[in-house]
Image (cartoon, rainbow, N blue to C red):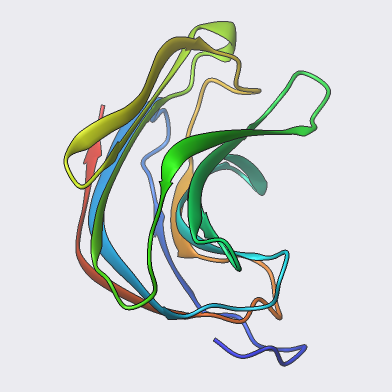
Length: 153
């Protein structure tokens, strides 16, 4: 994806009405990172146009993180405690159940569970869309994606 003001590249999958939980699983390889201070999105779950939770690689450091929002709508960042080198495939699993203050988030990297919590606050009780990549324009990256699955429930 280029840094051009009109550039946007992503893959989306709408979920059936009433979906509260889903598990996304796939392989990702970042071959070239984008602008400093930006990131390369792997999986991003949405409720309508609101990003609910996502897993990403931070440009510059290569660190892996997931992000949610708090009750005020501000982002909450949680480090997964490892990095993803450029040019190396990583296996990412991301399980989200949207249930307000009793939401669940689990993250696996290379088949090792890196985070699990059944009392995360999410601002919704539904998931409407899964997105791979970035939803906004001008987010430069060179991302390879393979063997993605989405399981509902």
